[in-house]
Length: 337
Ligand code: KG4
Ligand code: ZN
Image (cartoon, rainbow, N blue to C red; front, side):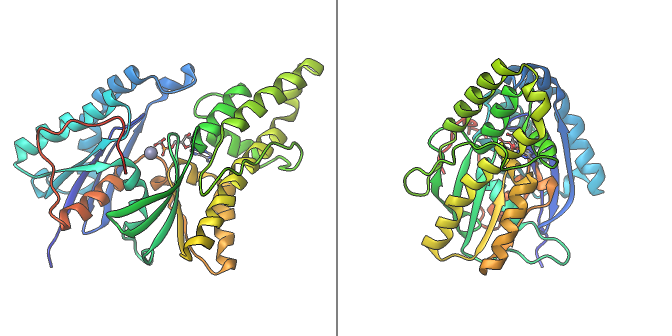
C-alpha cells in the first residue's frame, strides 16, 4: 500500500493552522486563533497578516511534533491558495514554497471553499465517508453555497448568496446588538435560552437555489433602533429572545433552499460545512433530514471553522491525482469554483 503523508497549511483569514494527514487520517490539526481582531469588530487584514507571520513557524512545528513524524516524512505540502485575504494567504504560500524548496517536495494549491467540503472525506475510526454524489451546504463568514460533489475534486456550485454570507449575517446582527466579533458563536450561545418565535424577521426566498441575507441585517437594524427609542434597555432585557429569533431566521432561510436542492437533485447524501456548520440549531435541523430519508453528515467542531486538516485532505486527493502546483503561482483573494 502506498503511504501518503501531507502537511496542510491554512492562513486565509484569521486562523493560522497546520495539520498532518497520513493516508486520509488526521495525525495532528493545530489551530492558532487571533484574538487581536475582537476589539475592532471584524478581521483587520493587516493585523491578520502580521499575526500569521508570528504564528506560522511555531504552528507548523506543533503540528509536526504532535503527529510524531519527522519533517522529511512529508510527501507534499498543501497550502491555501485562495480565496481569502491576500496578505494572509501570502504568508502561508511563501512559507509553503520555502519549505517545498528546502525539502525538495511537491507543492499543492488548495481551494479554501472546496477544502471545507472535503473535511467530510477525512477518514475516522467507525465513520463512513459520504456516498457520491454528495450535496453540501457550505456556510462560512464569506460564502454561502450549495455544492454538488460528484467526486471529491469535482464540485459544482448550484446555489449561492447574492449579497451577504450566512456567517456575515450572524456577525453583522451580533454587532448591531453590541456583541464582539465574531458574533455567530455568541448568538448561538444566547439563543439556547431564548424563544425563537418571540420576534419575527423576514425569511428571504429569492429565485432558484440562491440566498439573500442583506434584508435581515436591515430588519435587525430598524428593529433595534425602533425598540430602544421606547426602552433604552430593550436589547439587554431581551437578548436571548432576539438571538434565538435571528438564529431561527438564518437557519430556516438556509434550510428552505437546501431542502429545495435535495428535492430538485434527488441526492440524499447531504451535509454541512464551513464555520456556520458549528451552529447548534443548524446541526439539529440538518440531522432532522434523516427522517426524510437523507444520510446526513455533520462535521466535528474542529473541522467546521477554518482548519488545516481540510487543506491536508484536499492535498491528499490532489496527490492521488498528481495535481501539483508550482513555485511561481501567486495566491488569489478571489477564486472561481
Ligand atoms: O469558515 P470560517 O471559520 O471562516 C471563513 O472561511 O469565513 O467561518 C467563520 C464564520 C463566522 O462568521 C462565525 O461567526 C461563524 O462562522 N460561526 C458561527 C458559529 N461558529 C462560527 N455562526 C453561528 N453559530 C456558530 N456556532
Ligand atoms: Zn473558511
